[in-house]
Image (cartoon, rainbow, N blue to C red; front, side):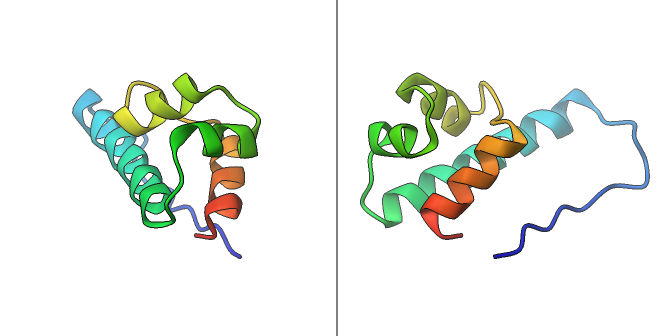
Length: 78
């Protein structure tokens, strides 16, 4: 499995860009989880976080750490 990150040349982001990215990450986590028939509690247990943390990621309220994002990718096989 390879995790590829695109690093933008410009480091000036608008807050709306960051919100959009947070929502996109959350949406992709939610879709991968649902396609596999798992609930938030199951994913949280697999990663070692609380269910509210997963909920916050999926809603775009908070972003997962890079370690948690990599673990979610591994667990969800994406």
